[in-house]
Length: 112
Length: 114
Image: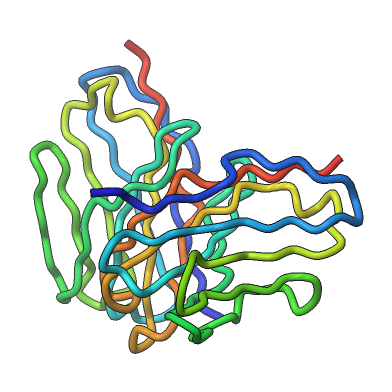
């Protein structure tokens, strides 16, 4: 079945440093979604990427979808303490009948 | 505008009992998804339902687990004869359309098995 791998599992950064998490799928994806989950909270939708090579920005966050639609990345510039949490990518490979396949997430820990 | 409502937030059961988890989707959403999350793990897809229909249950264990989304009322995830390994957080999400649409998650139900 489809597998979505995410690295790194944990990332410690100093406040103000940049952060990147990478997502790789074993199959071509029709779309990829990114979610953020704060400790003790629930996943919150951040963005969806659909097109090959697509790049989207949300303030300090930049999301990319690979040309082959099998990988994606999330980059945060100048991290702040509010960025703490776990960032998940979630891929969809079918025509929409299947559920999303989530990566295991990257836990972002920020040291002030 | 109420979001996805899950209850109970915490549920404690003894081995062998039944657990019933409820989920009311966001207003206007007719697609419901159930996920299971273990500590420090990602979300594992269990089942995708529309009103009165199971669309995809490929992530559901074959035994003891069932889900429904009746015409009226919330979606229910039911676990019969619970075992220690069922302890986890169970999240429900809803969307307007299929999985191509963003999913809105509830606060989850933390299930603990004694």
